[in-house]
Amino acid sequence: MPYYGYGYGYGMDPLYLLVVLVSTVIGLAAQAYIKSTYGTWSNVKSDGITGAEAARRMLDANGCQNVDIKSIGGTLTDNYNPTDSNLYLSRDNQYGGSVASVAVACHEAGHAAQHEQGYAMMKLRSALVPVVNLTQNAWTIVFILGVALNLAGLTTLAIWLFSFSVLFQVVTLPVEIDASRRGVRYIQESGMSAQQVRGAKKVLTAAALTYVAAALSSVIQLLYLLARTSRRND
Image 1 (tube, rainbow, N blue to C red):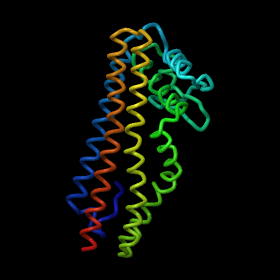
Image 2 (cartoon, rainbow, N blue to C red; image 1 turned 135 degrees about the horizontal axis):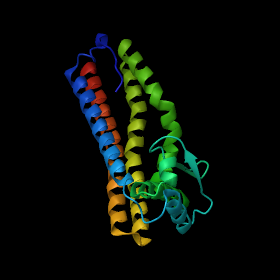
Image 3 (spheres, rainbow, N blue to C red; image 1 turned 30 degrees about the vertical axis):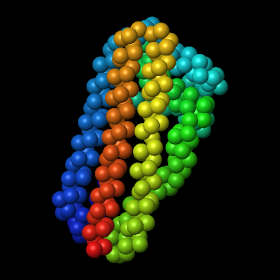
C-alpha cells in the first residue's frame, strides 16, 4: 500500500494504518513460516536424489523432454519460465539432496507440466502478465493525481488499474496450488518414502501460504481504496 501523504487525509486515517499493519503482519508471518519450514526440511536427506534429478524425471514423465533445467542465483528463486521453456533452480535446490530441494524442484516441474498440458488458469495468468506489468506502477501515479486534483474519474481509473494486480494475485493461487499438487503426487507415485512425501507436503503448503498472504493483502488494499474513495466522493 503506497503512502499518499497527510495532506490528503490518508496518512492520518486509522483505517489506512490498520490496513498497513495487517498487510505487513500477514506478509512477514508467511515469509517466516516458509523460511522456517524450508530450513527444517533442507536438513533432512531425500531418498538419494537431488532436486535437479527429481525435476528431470518428473518433466520426462509429463512429456516435458524439451524443458531444460538451468541454474539461477539466490535462495528460493526457483521458477519455470514458459517463454523460454526453461526450469530455473537455485543452486541449493538444483544440487541439494534434501527433502526440501526435491519438493521445490518438483513444484516447478509441475508448472512445466501445466504449460505442456494447457492448464487454463496458467494460460490466464500468462495473459495477465503484460497487463499487470503496465498497470502495477501506473495506478499509483493516477491515484495520487486523482486525489490531488480532486478528480473522482482519475481515482476510479486508478482503482480499476490496481484491480488487475489483485486479479493476478487471485489467479496465481490455483496455479501454485495445482503445481504443488502435481509435485506431491509425482513424489508419492514415484515410490519415494513416506517421510519424503510428508516433508514435500509441509514445504509446499508453507510456500502456498505466501501466495495466499499476497492475495489477501492485495484484496484488503483494494477494499480499502474502494471504501476510502467512496467516503471521499460522498
